[in-house]
Image (cartoon, rainbow, N blue to C red; front, side):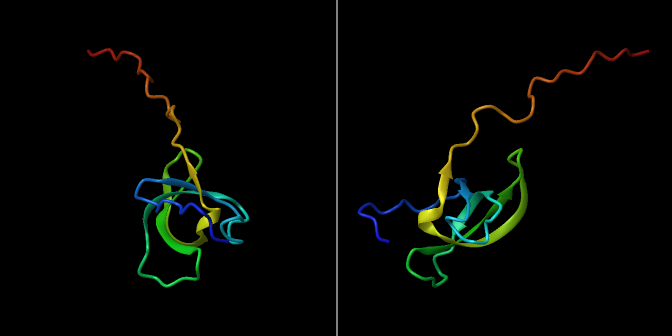
Length: 97
């Protein structure tokens, strides 16, 4: 399935969404923050090894993974603009004495 336009290589910090389009192992889709592609591993044409952190719903890393995926099935995701946790939470004043 070659394209006319080559896809840019994945770089550290990219957040990707993996579904069954990338591999049958992602019956339950996951989000991954990329550490790097592993170019030294031999693969079939169009497939790549990716090292990264699997993310939970809050965007926190929960597991380090090495994944074998169809590059054309990898979807880049924009990072959320708003934080998932409230950054303006204030504590009530504390009385001393």
